[in-house]
Length: 548
View 1 (tube, rainbow, N blue to C red):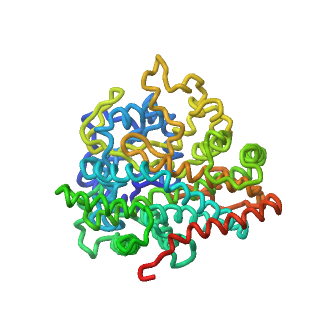
View 2 (cartoon, helix red, strand yellow):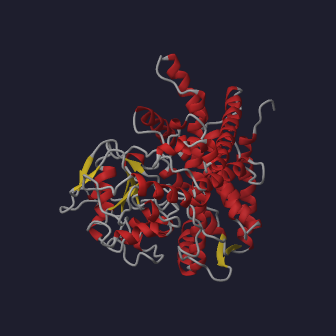
View 3 (tube, rainbow, N blue to C red):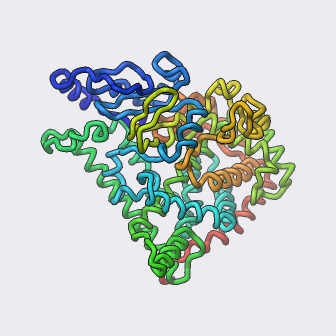
């Protein structure tokens, strides 16, 4: 699926309008090529509704695209989409021309499904002073609190291992609980001990799943971004009334969830019952701003900013670990090598603060997981703030620009045998590519080689995910603990095929947890129980309640 989908009923309505009202559109500028268009609707009838990144990749290698793989789409009479398939394109546009390519496209669905006001959600805030301030606040927290957040990652990783000891099969919900709990404690100072119905994490993931469903083409999201005049249809003729009601209800529920988390944290911070967390930092920053006569966040802005941090990493961390586990079950030889590395470093002691320098092969397995099956295969699209030209093509202001992360990670010109799970590629050079000379990030023939990334899973340019290091540390800590403690054993045939083994959603994830975690001996079982008692005592500090 894609953020840019239009229900078939709307397409038929617009086709009728095209026949009677509009001649075939001929662009006056030379936009990058794409599939042939139809009058008025452009390429809307061709936009894929299932794993769009695969269709984009296929089109990028045909005559429909430019010789370099640039792929352009016309969405209705004026909207345009540009899809990038080469890392050099990402470097040239998102990195080197960040002042032009750092905006976000207008997605009308967000007006309904996100708590108002919608321009304060940092992931979608238009590029400008407001976004820069939000980004600075998030960056400072993740940088300055890195050392304080590590014990949370370690303790929650231990609880995850304890959960797997007792629930080695059907462990998807426990993975979700873990990833949410790390962020709940870091952002709100709140423990996410339980992931069952009614819990903070369950409410969050339920809302996220419904949000993704609302954007799915099968839910018929309104195409207001392409055809704004459809907003003014009389209620009796509006085919999207039901969708809007569901979206508005979800927006209210998200506002209630984030508001409740924020209010509990704020009340306990004022009583001195909360430890270091993001909410404490942003409240302190706000108080100083008021005293200094500088612009301060409103309460709604602080509530949303904290919620953005929860949204930014909970899903992707859980799904990356789930995919990692699936890959270990499918490749026991790779798992054994990673376990041998972990055992050499930690022996009989459970890993606590895992170090990537001491565990290079395990880190290679994590990078290969993100390359092999990236959780967000199209990333969040960018948009242009003014007209631009590139490779002889005109890119108008307001063009949506999407990096096809899947294609970047499966480019045969860059990766040897990209369809196979081969962690060793990241031991040959830190980018995992065919080219040894990129190890230093420098190349006389390509002076901008330094913008190459070891993974595109966290985006690129000025909008790249600020939580990358936090996410990597969380994953390294968890995977080290898990493989120290368990063998990941396949339950029947493991399906790693992207078309058949993974869900079709905004974030891709395995359809089934076709594996189980089997403890590596009774000695490790005993250590897990002992370490769990320590972790439980540490995490209990996040269970303080107002009035207790």
